[in-house]
Image (tube, rainbow, N blue to C red; front, side, top):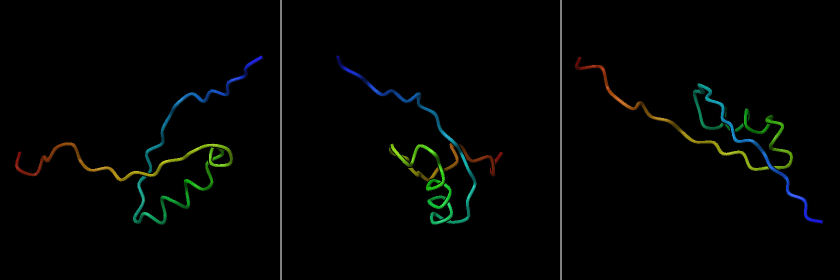
Amino acid sequence: MTYMLLMIDGFFIVACDTREAALAIAERCPAAEWGTVEVRSLAPCHDDSNA
């Protein structure tokens, strides 16, 4: 018999001042105990400063 472990994908968006702060939050994620947790930086998708 074959078993497969599936995780429903999801994501969290958190505002952090530093990458280290984001990594500290990621370490506390329950999925980090048995799976992969990615930390990525985000950039604005548009610039409203000239509007």
